[in-house]
Every structure is written in structure tokens, then in C-alpha cells.
Length: 196
Image 1 (cartoon, one colour):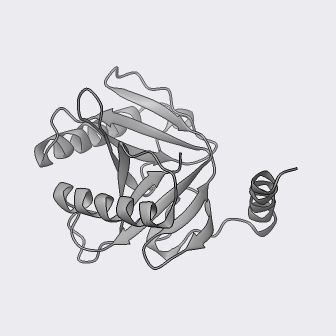
Image 2 (cartoon, rainbow, N blue to C red):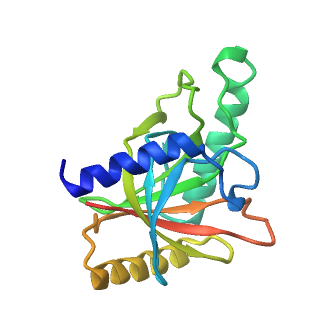
């Protein structure tokens, strides 16, 4: 077995043996499970388990688009959760994940984490379930009120740090992870860039 695969297997086994203890910035709510692989002055390297998300595409790439997408998810979940108890969408989770993808068009999506063991049936065509495989994610942590421009600036700082460290990554996609309400006095924000 080559070294990278054996390290991956060891990390997965350690996470199952020790159990997952969510970090403080999850505020006692469920959030995606990960193992910290490495921490530098500029970023963390984390190995995330496979995760599920409820996702909507923002209509515009601006603050109004994000607010509209967030309201649509809230309204949908509230309406959906009035039905069967077996098919509820858990909304007491973190983070809210805003993902920017560059391509022919700029794409901006908002996702909420769905805890393991739950998989709601989505009936709105504008909302979808996303299954993300286990992955290595590079993370930059920063404070302050979440903002698209601040997120872009921190994504650029993370890309620069990753290039300087010789890491390979997807240069066209990044996610901003928020772990508090927009109106909170303190914010733990992250930029996620997936390893290539």
C-alpha cells in the first residue's frame, strides 16, 4: 500500500475509534465531520467525510441574490417540515456554505449541511440534494461579518498560500463557510478550497 493511501486509511480508522467531537465554532450544532491533517500559519488541511447538503442557486451574484436564496431555503424547509416527521429537514446545523464556481458563467450556490442518517425528499425543482464525497479541503479562517468581497479576498489569500506551499487545488471554485447568523456579534468564517 502506498503512503498516501495508508495515511488516509489511518485517519479514517482513527476518526471511527475516537468518535467525532465537533469544534466549538459549531456551537453545539451538527456540522460536517473532519480530521485535521495539517495546520500552518496560513491554512488548515482537513480530511472531510462524505456529506450531504441541501442546495439552491442564487439568481444573482450579489448580496441580494444570497439573501433571496437563503429566504427561499428557509421558506421551503419550514413548509416541508410541516409534513411527515420521518422526512424532516434538519435546520439546526452549521455551516451555511456559499460556493462560487467560475466557468462560462459565474455560478453562486447556497448550501445547508444535512446531518448523517437523514435524506429528505425534495419536491421543489429549484432546490436539490448534493452528495459530496470524502475530500481533502484547504481552509482559511477569518472573522468579521460575512461579505462576498471579503470572501473573494480571503479566497485569493488562500490560493496564494497554497501555491507557495506547492499544494494542488481547484483554482476555479471556492466556498465560504459561515457558522453564525449574519447578525451575530462574533463570526467564525472559513474559505474552503478543495484539493485537486
